[in-house]
Image 1: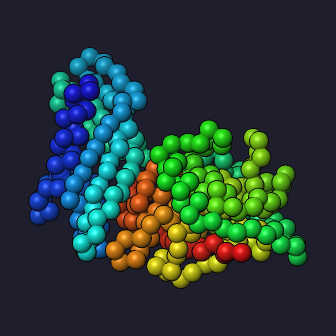
Image 2: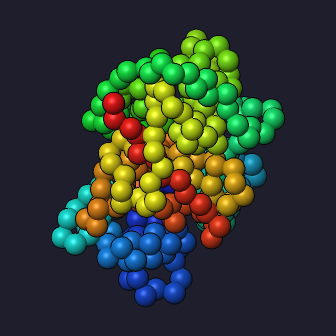
Image 3: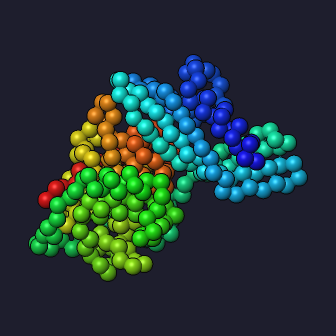
Length: 293
């Protein structure tokens, strides 16, 4: 099975650097990614792919492999090179060693860390006192780089881990927690309990929009106004419920954000997520710049 998986990767890598005029691609994602890069005057000049088998089974002459793919894209844009990386869980099936199915196992965007009832507001405990801190953007980015593809054992891991990861990055940057033990108040994590804003994408978006003490942010109108360590929130369906968050960890040659994230584990990914399987034409974004004390 490992040889079957290796052959699969070899074909896939070739597609990312194949003739862009090709009408039929073995790996459709390659076409989407190439088109998104072309819109930014960028291109993939080299791809590396590695796979790790998670589960495998054989029944009659059918072979099934659940695997994790790790892609590294060397991207060139206006003479500047940078490396983008992403992880993807996939399921492949073979019949008599011939590939019959290979598809992404899409991450679950709603999970056990979501509140049972829809949160339309948070109790922000808007007191007059100020929790003083200095936001260290470099430390937040360093944390995002260290843990983008793994999980800090000091923290609980969620099935939908994107907001938990961003909260960890913000805390690494010095943001103070507040509101314990009320789950609908402030932004905090303690032992096996946490505020909704710590782990739920929509709740963190509400918190960043409204907090007046401690961790605070201002919404800006466009992504190019963001700095390293700032946050982007995503509403993939455009239904008003935000379901993903990322942290700005770099800028491309045009000064646009590159981001790190969990759930869709990725680093230095272009902020718009147009190459994501979760992307829809209705997607909406919120751009938050963390207020430096």
